[in-house]
Length: 75
Image (cartoon, helix red, strand yellow):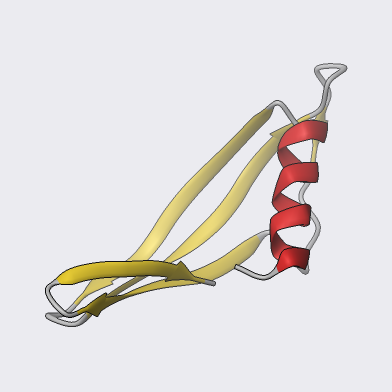
């Protein structure tokens, strides 16, 4: 995961103690797995529901096999 993505996730979970996600479009083959992660709801530290930004509310994630084990998540 890139440094920018890592910082984004750290800030997301710091600013929003409650993050509700959905996982859709799950696909599994012998060599990889993929899915779409969708942020459905954010609740900030004041208990207010905040809509996620359009640009980052969903992301495709992919996991590829490395030999006979699963590798790192790519997104």
